[in-house]
Image (cartoon, rainbow, N blue to C red; front, side, top):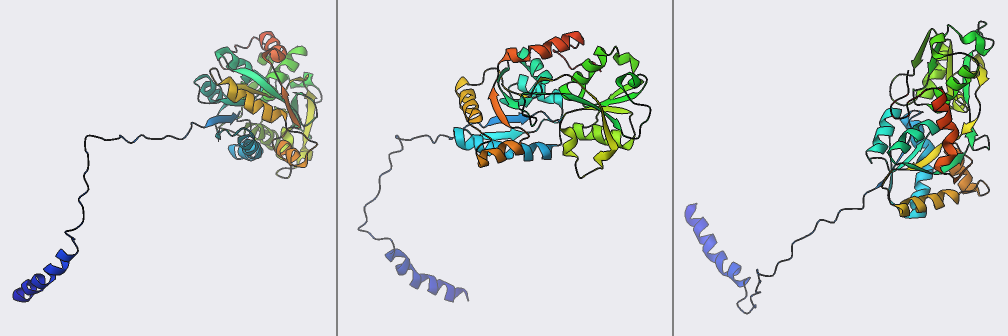
Length: 312
């Protein structure tokens, strides 16, 4: 067997050598001339976050069409990110991890202390650029007929930094002479995201006597619970609506492009109407920091420290 292998190799050698033509010119390689390859990174995405008043899936579905539109209209790479809590959202804006923030007014005035600036605000589903807090209870709760009856009761609010879900309601109670110490307890919706829904569900289940949510929050649970069992006990005064803010240091060119694309949306165009209605708004209009002076005045009246999380 070994002799046969040697013979086969001997006869195959000329065939292999024939493949190496002697008339081919050698290619000189000049190793002194080298070009180092460079790593081409894609442009950093512009991050966009919706204050987590609802579950992340709701936040995504509500703003997915809007982000797709903004990316097409501006040519910017946009990416939606999902903070778990109101506090995390505020801190991420302060650290520069969220470029474009969509938040309630109280969260905004906190972020403004680190240089974030309002550039747009929404027309609410009501058709107005403001919104209210709704104080809710079970319809069959005969002990609650007016705000005065809330003394000594258990109140669940959305979050210490929630405007419609806590602070506007707190202001309404104070206007009626009811202070935080007058409640048996004040608790906040647990866990990340979905906090508005959790308040409504807690009231529905009877685990608290009353709750506070922003107007429009009840609609999120339509078809999931019997909303006929929920009664709106009172509403707060109206305050400026939700706001778009750019973090400190974000390129003014980016802010301008996004703002102009937002302002171009119109309920008069069917495609735009779908985008706006899905996002829970009827339009987007210009805003400035001074538009939120009433919210700062309310925070001062309630003795809330806007530099840190609101007192519980």
